[in-house]
Every structure is written in C-alpha cells, then in structure tokens.
Amino acid sequence: MTPRFDPETSDAQSGYLRTEWKVTGKDLLNMPMKKSRVIARVEERSPFRVKIKAEKQELNALTDEWIVAGNDEAVEGEIMGELQGRLRASR
Image (cartoon, rainbow, N blue to C red; front, top):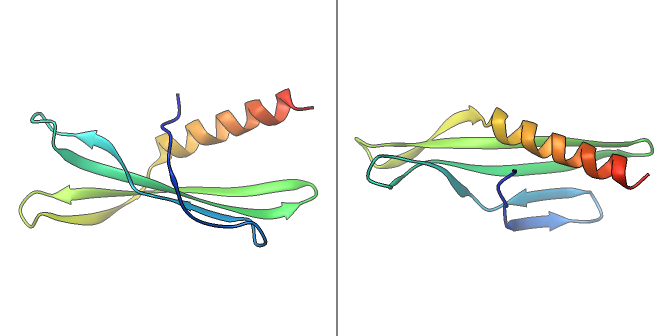
C-alpha cells in the first residue's frame, strides 16, 4: 500500500503538486533515517499524462544533516500502480 503524503504546495492551473516530507525509514532505535516527498506534474491533459517523482533524503548520522539520496523508486512504483488501477476503474 502506498504511504499517504500530505500536500504542501499545489497549483491546479499548471497541474503541479508537491507533498510534505514523510519519514520512510527508521533505524534500530526507531529514529528517522530516510524521508521522501512526491512531486507530480500533469504534462498533458488529453491524452492524460502525468510525471511522478519521489525524492529521497537520508540522514547523515555524523553531521545530523539530511542529504539527497536520489529517487525513491519503490514509492514511485507504488504510486504509479495505484494511479493506473484507479484510472482503469474509472473507465
């Protein structure tokens, strides 16, 4: 099941949405170690095409700073699968 992300910024006119960061990984002491957020943009309305990107950051335990760690491909895949299922069901 796709984790639920709370919207942070959205613009209906341009079709842009960015969510707040959500903790997606913890260490053995239950401390946050990874977080992700989703950015979505409608590229075309007909035929409907949307671009989804899930950014990931990891906590550097030595500096206590969040560092960019690429895309969270697992979250991207879950979101795309869920969207495809919903689009098929709405036909």
